[in-house]
Length: 114
Image 1 (cartoon, rainbow, N blue to C red):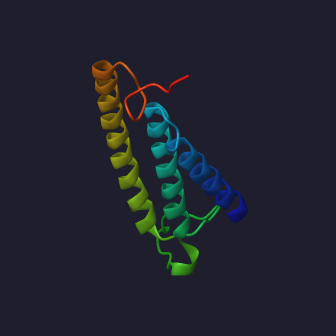
Image 2 (image 1 turned 120 degrees about the vertical axis):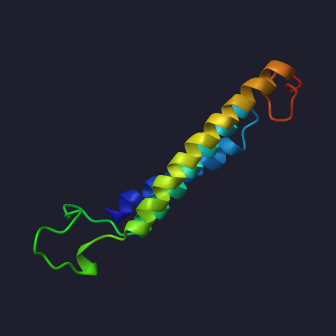
């Protein structure tokens, strides 16, 4: 399971960085989103990966820390998802306004010479 999560983090981070280096603003926006997903998945995996574990204690049970995952990374990722969604929405609005004002969607504001 750890190998699959590690490969997913690597693919998301690599794709995000590659898209960040593209000349169009929409590709940069998608690259930022993919990179934030990779960071969120990394933070989530630091809390421990458990499959089939109960989320809460039953009535009368005594729990140990070894049987449960850490809830702090889950709370951090949930907050990061909300902030990332709002930031992406704001970036898309700015992208549309810049496209309307300049007539191009290149990062530097001009088309490549052919």
